[in-house]
Image (cartoon, rainbow, N blue to C red):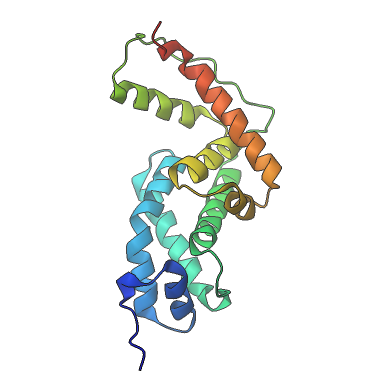
Length: 186
């Protein structure tokens, strides 16, 4: 007789398979695992608005729950979760008319700050740069460097070719490096 693994010992994909078959306990475990990180993602993507981020996080899980029966066994759960989150952000930004075209990258009005920075100052400067990036670039940065998703996963989430994801990530890093040059020690 096989003894089932405890919920906490199961992978996200195993839990989602169970949730797709009707297990609310499995879905609750997924929520407990990912809600906080997902809310952090939304805070960063929605201008530090914690209330809006909480609403988006809950909406993401509501959509996930509603679509749970469509989950294909073996599909990467985090990629599916962040696909939903990404689309919510994209729709929000589109509705707010804040999406800037790929040609509109202009981050030149940085305040001059002392060259010698401690780690907090550098972190704050990076966050400021990320807030000023056009949303498509900031979103890719967040998915790759903060959520640690791979280029193929991001391509799947954003419905962009992998080459475009790589190119935009590279361009984003160039922008960040250029804007952090003033903080290099001479």
